[in-house]
Amino acid sequence: MITRQDVEHVARLARLHLSDDEKERMRVQLDAILAYIDKLTALDIEGVEPTSHAVPLLNVMRDDEPAPSMPQGDALANAPDRAGEFFRVPRIIED
Amino acid sequence: MPTALTALTIHELTERYRRGDVKPSDVADAYLSRIERLDGDVGAYLAVTHDRARAAARAADERYRAGRPLGPLDGAPVSIKDVFCTRGVPTTCGSKILEGFVPPYDATVVARLEAAGAVMLGKTNMDEFAMGSSTEHSAYKLTRNPWDLSRVPGGSSGGSAAAVAGELGLAALGTDTGGSIRQPGAFCGVVGLKPTYGRVSRYGVIAFASSLDHPGPLTRDVRDCALVLRAIAGVDPHDATSVDEPVPDYAALLDQGVRGLRLGVPREYFAEGLDPEIERAVRAAIERLRDLGATLEDVSLPTTDYGLAVYYIVAPAEASSNLARYDGVKYGLRAPGGKDLIDMESRTRAAGFGAEVKRRIMLGTYALSAGYYDAYYGRAQKVRTLVKRDFEAAFARVDLLLAPTTPSVAFKHGEKEDPLAMYLNDVYTVGGDLAGLPAISVRCGFSSNGLPIGLQIIGRPFDEARVLRTAYSYEQATDWLARRPELA
Image 1 (cartoon, each protein chain N blue to C red):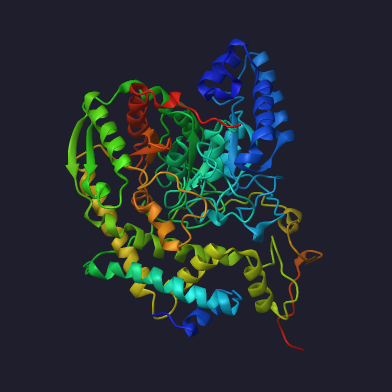
Image 2: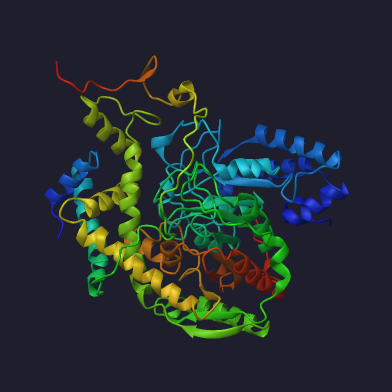
């Protein structure tokens, strides 16, 4: 059973401001979805290895050779706010 | 009356290009004017790239005139789902949070199509971040099914499917994470192929669920599908999960027929909840393939019923991580008034994401959070192993599996308000995503109210050639493609 406190905690982790209406709707909907997902507890998974990718993946290596990368101007071009060569964000550290 | 240019397939068009009967510019213009006339009703496109299309078409004209076309896609119009980054062309992924974003590079598949001479017509509508089965979760517009404008085209690649079905596009790219190529393919009566995981590069595809995202083609017929797949498939140094397997000439292998192939019919895919009209059409298609020389076998995929539950943990979990990048710093929206960094991020994400995306971020974050990880994400990953083993056991006995693509035909706009009801659309498609298998949807009939029905053919990993050739044999033996939707 998902509580209002659960919703608020997860919204904080997910960096989402939710209105009171949204919190209540989210609580009801997540509860219904998780109730459906609970059917997974009917299966015996003792000793089963988890699958993270359908195709088994090993480390993919390449030679460590320098090559051109994206120009800085391109990387900054979509920034909502910038200062010179930097992305600008609201103050993080208190005075 | 001569056949309209927009009624022709890629292989029919390029043959005419080579003969000099018609040139790529004529075809690009025919599509652009048809889009102008009819896309107001359908809503397939978020952006139409007139200038880029006309320039590419003129370059193709020149190559044909000089007798040096680039190959079987030269001068073929293509429509690109807005999940693919296109250099210099705004890419929104159907979300307000990416409004105004102009990618600094092309997705590998887009670059490969353009290098093969394809002419990009525009970017197609989709459910926001590819999360949905109706394209109703787009932050921008509604897309209508060309067979019945009061109905959805499916999703999330609904704009791509509607464009191909409505002759507003000829071939399109989509992505399939839980069914998002095959389901709209079925709803719009076009061919939709989800290739094997790793067969096609994900570089430049805006990430939803990285272990499940599969780019692939939507086309008018199977031969076109084979041609587009060959152009986009293959290992890519920019995607470490792409696999270095040879890419066969799929189109050249289509004529081999189905004689001797063992086709499995999974009983769990014909269970409760399947529309009887769909069951009849799919069973008739299966009989048709037997008449063509294949042998049929009943098989069982016992964990089928758990696939959706696995999917709705794994996909939101991966999405909650992937979508953490939308923080109002590097690109896209930034909401005003944030008093510090976290407040700014939280306001931006609240303003930029739609309800379905928020729901999945919340679900995924919850499933990964301390105390719940093992109960949800850990368990889902283990059941994913069981789903995969079911398919492996079936493919030890048969070459391909045959099933419906969807439990129902296209539904009406607004009909599925409940999130869980919407999720149930993917019941026959998620298994292929979880196991990373190649799977196609082809038209196999119509409901009594005139809506297309899809037959799904699922193959072993990297066995797209057999999937395509079986779909082709069926398509050649039937005349379902003769029927076309009528727009205005």
